[in-house]
Length: 220
Image 1 (cartoon, one colour):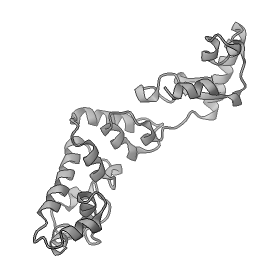
Image 2 (cartoon, rainbow, N blue to C red):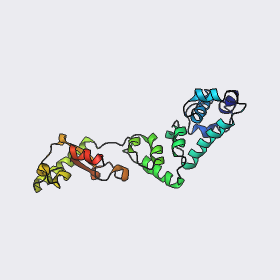
Image 3 (tube, helix red, strand yellow):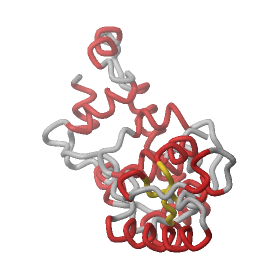
Image 4 (cartoon, rainbow, N blue to C red):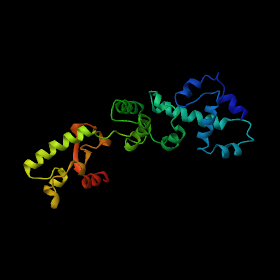
């Protein structure tokens, strides 16, 4: 513990500024030491300290901590404020064997930062590391009520003129709902082009589907 404090709780350590980009807290409060122990122990600090209580150095602790920091800074060219305090130890264990292009990663992060419909910017980094698949990490904004009503009105008007359902998927079906005109409350807003595949959350990419078809589409 003494060696650990000398390394991670020393406010004069030249690495503090670099560490602070990814870790919340301060050296004086031993936040960096706690983080280093948390990372190397996969969250089981007590067990790790018990197993290493007789060690006369902290080489393993320093090596692992610096490996995680170096990995993060190598994958992400740009340092963003939302990076601070993320579970980098867990993310390292999960993704460090994957090969990344820092330039491509940077481009993806900038694109996502520019998207006004993303509510959780802190989730952007794991979303990119995971191959842009888990949109739940981003807490993407749903279509607002004005958009839903506008699209519903337009779809319904066109559907009634054609004598088909105002749910596009019902309209091309062969069951009893082929000509059903659903009420707004009976429909859900859907991304025509899936958000995970680049579709935006705006009126041009919105369609109203009956709840049954919207659930079915979401399960595919």
